[in-house]
Image (tube, rainbow, N blue to C red; front, side, top):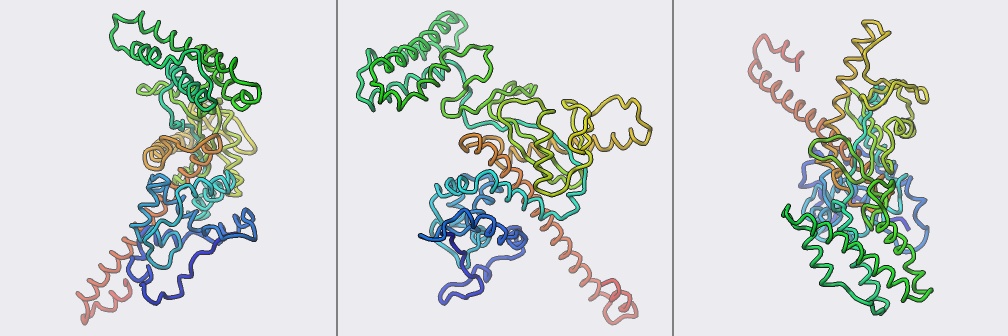
Length: 447
């Protein structure tokens, strides 16, 4: 059953309300009043049963997801920060200050599974709509980036060693006696394989081959000694082990992590980072306001041109407005998709002087998407994705984009508030300076 947030209007007999000792003009206070929390209540209500123990309030769970991403925290660390920060509690709908965790950190995992990709898209939509309707009329800039997964740098030796450890674990759980555990043999070969000496190149190559051979032996030993019923329980793992041991350097759709099969190897041509392991994300941003209007995750490494349709479709689905013009880099080509004209840099042949000037300005504005992507990575959790599976990739990408939009709105709102307060202070100074003089009427008009 869906839970309810506490009533803020009802005063507590012994404890002061949060509104009595916090600054409501704080960025989180302003954002809390701007977000339409009833929208989330109505959207997520069908996901809850009508009977049973009440769940945590929807506002609390959505607020924790937003705070976690805006301040780049983890599921556990956001709970610790929530207990010590009254602004966090006010944002999540609390009426009085609390001294204990609002929920277990694992509840955030369950809530993400409950609302799914469609629910997170609703949070993303709210982060766009709070900026006003003007951003929906702007042209868009589109670019792709890599969302790295939380895995170690993959090598055949690392994967083979993990297979050896997993085989030992399965044998221990099923009480199967292996022909040989290779515990010390594998450890010594791993030490040789990681040697930094250039004189031991042959020994390093031989040690790596030996580790891979040992992994294959343990897999086959388990397949022989496990009964059919018990082997069926580990059939999917055995298939993954065999695929990893048989894959070659030039193969496609390789496995780079045993626990994250969706990870792909993507080369973006970066000098400092030749290969990145994760998924590709396509961003669409408003050209003038720099609001992120779409964030779509793709499995594998599709060509950038093949990501355009889904990126534009998500923007139209969320905002209800289809972009007329989209500007890209040289990795794309000029085309038209669903009524949207895609513009890529070219030599300008066949264009008038006005069209060339307009395109040049738009392509210069398109360059603003690069630092936007950089901020989503460094500040809002896109640099390393800890969520599981392909759904976790899509959810993390949209939450990072939502956090960027929310933070951008908070900065603008606080900046406008400071400007108004400074203006009022300056006007009051002028009022006191000219009060009682013939110029008072003019000052009153200005004020």
